[in-house]
Image 1: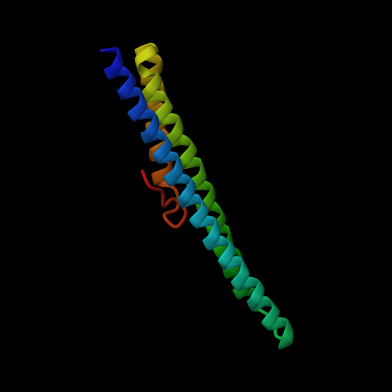
Image 2 (image 1 turned 90 degrees about the vertical axis):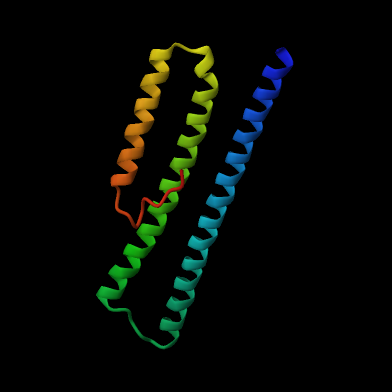
Length: 128
């Protein structure tokens, strides 16, 4: 029985580790995309300077909006990853804690999920 519990705990631990590694990989990919977008912007800006051209106010606003969305999406994904890690930790601690505090925590996570779903769809693309 003790060996079974140990195996269950080990499996949970490795699942959490796998989840954390997957989240880190996803964040890394998002950061790479963001960096590429910034590099393209920088290169584009240099070309414009060479040609003595200027961006219109509308183009600048569109670029600022695109960068803002990329930054917000990255932040949402990062917060989502941290929240999922807390949920996993909460589930593991569920056996050791009072049911009422576990229920409150689960309710809080459900509310956060609904708030994330209500965000601007361009920003709140998050895996569950």
